[in-house]
Image (tube, rainbow, N blue to C red; front, side, top):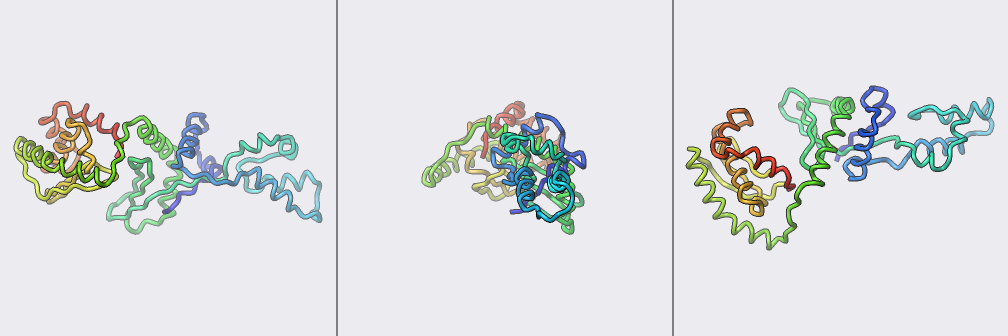
Length: 276
């Protein structure tokens, strides 16, 4: 697992850390949820350790030496009076020196770098084959507010959405066995109405999607469709069959879906409330 390292001071220096309570609240929510990792170090502890290690033979006044130690590479500067007047509670509230965001890097023949937030709030970078990791991370730091906003949005959707029931392996097998003939019947029904054909049909344990359609017309469906309401199950089936006419999500694609399911927007919205 790779980590994007975020130093608050440096992010503020490039103007990519909004000074708003709402933004900081989102950061803390993501830390609490474990999506963003927070280091245990804080600048108060670092300052105190450095002060304890201060050699007695250094020249200059005590105040000069103290200011030098406290201000070296820290997110903000302190005067000796500021530092010495602070209470233990003040030190406890010091910001972390660094946040770490786990991410996945996917390199391919694409021409540009993209930043994506997955269904579970995970960070994914897609980049050209020869792209250097440091270039991707530098771009991500500049877009740190966007990353936080979208991660927080995914977290909110996950917490407010409908969680599917947890099933044992035997229960899953029973659900899938009962679902197979239903899936076959619905595919034949909708394929006939849409005037399309399809190839091999597979049922898989996918963690990021409800279904997919390959360029060859092979269809994959998530076994969890078997425990969804019928109207949402049918929406996924029609969605994947529509790719047999349009292998994209263009206006033409959605027109195909709407011709079969005029209320597809409501079904699609409802499906987003369920988390795989």
